[in-house]
Length: 180
Image 1 (spheres, rainbow, N blue to C red):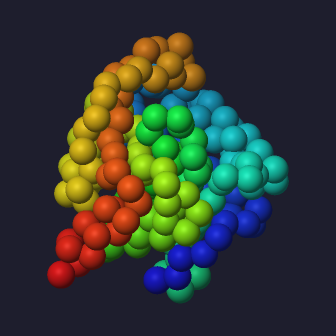
Image 2: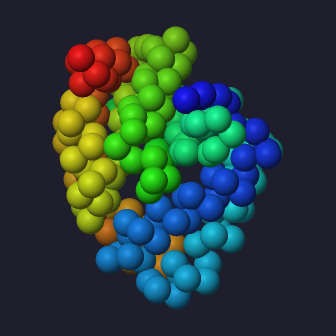
């Protein structure tokens, strides 16, 4: 498996996976109209912006097995004054789950965070309805620090949790332990 920085050539794969992941996991909280008719174009617009005009604190990586796109991660360094660097997105294709893709992407994000934002904690936000993601992050050592609310593109207010590993090296150590 190869982990590399995303390019504009990855736009359709990233936007497509992001939209499909939302369809698969967020149908309890996002409208059918949004998920069926709007999510892909909205995600495509987000990723066009991120890949053509990236923020200076942004890292987007893709995972490939051979030439097959398997998943991606987006990290924003020093994103929040209290919680630190955010893993803003981590999505793995359904067929690639359980193969170590998510762990490899997290390891790359932790390494980048240690090199560039080592004095900031590493966190993410996960929706309450996404039990599979919660289980994955907890298995990787993340701790639930707080509850917040996401204002969805459908004008819903949805409960989410803020999970953190503390400093990025804690995530790296937990990933090493889970491989052993």
